[in-house]
Length: 68
Image (tube, rainbow, N blue to C red; front, side, top):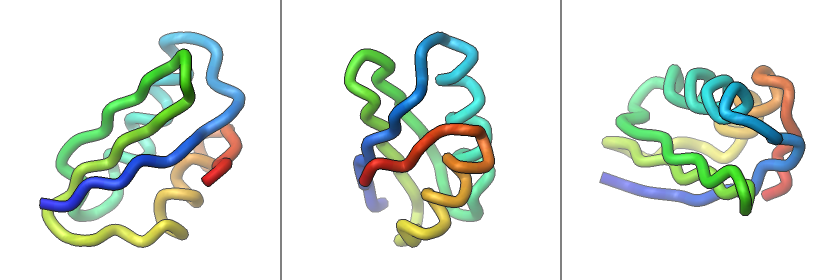
């Protein structure tokens, strides 16, 4: 298992959390997504390494900004 945490901006409500969780969770290999709305932290757990570019694309597809 691997785990990485990213910062996402633009999330303001539980719908935002659900959108990001759904998009990131659809990445092949991702087993869990935890979103901390107040801080914008998104922790991605996977059974193999997932590229930052894949996570960025999923977050942007959900309509939010990948800040790193």
